[in-house]
Amino acid sequence: MSIQLSDFSDSMIVIMTLSFFVISYFMGMLVHSAWMYEDKGSIQKDSKFGWLLCMVAGTCITGWMFYYGYYVNFVR
Image 1 (cartoon, rainbow, N blue to C red):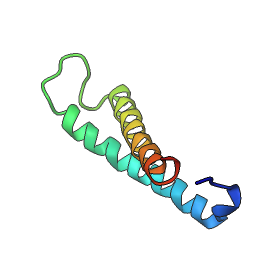
Image 2 (image 1 turned 30 degrees about the vertical axis):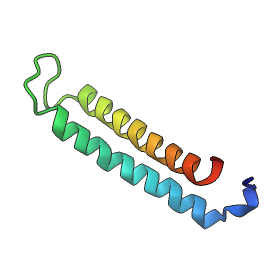
Image 3 (image 1 turned 120 degrees about the vertical axis):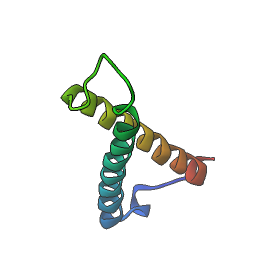
Image 4 (image 1 turned 45 degrees about the horizontal axis):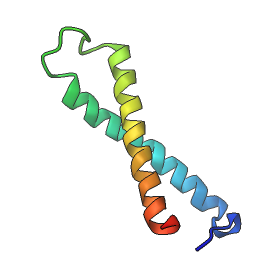
């Protein structure tokens, strides 16, 4: 099964991009709440570096979910 660019409409791409960023943000909040409130001496709870790490982790997790969903539905 091959995918052509014409298979995706502009509104579909916009909705997928927005949903990716929204899901990434909330995934980062979940990681932050789970990770930052453990007993850690190296990173403070209100640290911008800790927040950034959690947001990157949320983006990576969401990116993997989107890539895997694309792979299962279209490539395989």
